[in-house]
Image 1 (tube, one colour):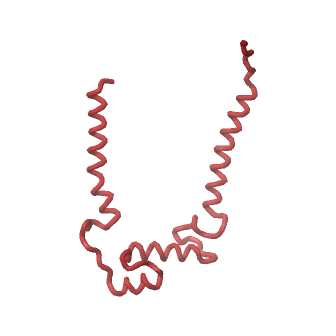
Image 2 (cartoon, one colour):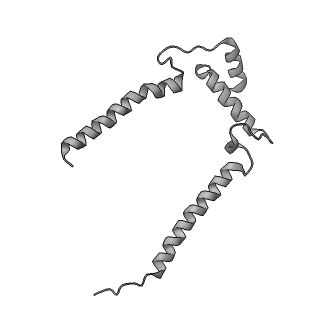
Length: 123
């Protein structure tokens, strides 16, 4: 490829990245980027109960903290965060599945390496 094509592709990727930054910020902060987000007195009281700092007190932070508190309770199934529960659950299943996959692949490579005859080395 010539340099012009590579530069054109790089410029396109950078333009796409810059144009999607506003979308990502809107999803993170609720669309009002750059404006002060003030919490209601009820939200501030809820944040104090849950141990969330006042500067980070938003409805999203309250809901996330409630979800984690629910997941940490014993017998809390279906809380939306099953990987944070104290049982073997989904996280253990994922770890076991990934271990089996990667272990099988590495065993196959080891077996292939043992089967190949070694070439005589010339001195």
